[in-house]
Amino acid sequence: MKNYKLTINLRRALFGSAALVSMLGGMILTPSSVEAIKVKSSKPKPNRFYKLTTMFLEKENKCLEGNRVARGSTLGGAAFMDNCQNVSGQSWKLVPAGNGYFRMKTQFLDKKNKCFEGNRFAPTSTLKGAAFMDKCQNVSGQLWKLVPAGNGYFRLKTQFLEKENKCLEGNRFAPTSTLKGAAFMDNCQNVSGQLW
Image 1 (cartoon, rainbow, N blue to C red):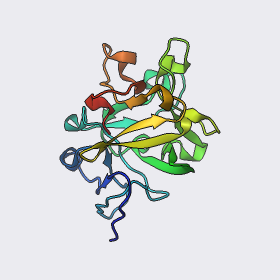
Image 2: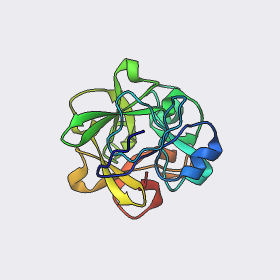
Image 3: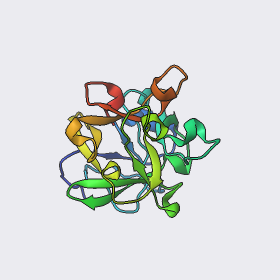
């Protein structure tokens, strides 16, 4: 298998068990395919789906889940960290969008043309600022950049909030957490919930 040397390291391995996800650390990029592959790359292969976790919650085996914005959906449809499992809402595809940006899609909502959107954390924003799946369109909140953070981790920023130095934060799903545990854009800082 060919290794690609690019700007950041993405770790990929077969997602066969929760123990394997916990062992790998960092933002777990785990192909939902059958073959086990470990590749150094910052350029995801097209049409491959991966699991995403944070340093903060990787030992608890939590993965980012893209949700449908609808009445009755968990957290109203905001993305959140849930137990890593074999569900299509936790299978993410990064689609090149040019100039170093990607659109993020889930297998769950890929055919409905939904993209992950980083929102401004404010009471008047959609879902009060939680990140969510929305119709794919030409908006800067759906253009994501992978920024190296060292030790195989990186931060996720949107073009929309990049100049304000905001990063995606994976939060603990709990009533006492910010936005009850929804993933959200916060000031970039040295916290493990922003290290993917």
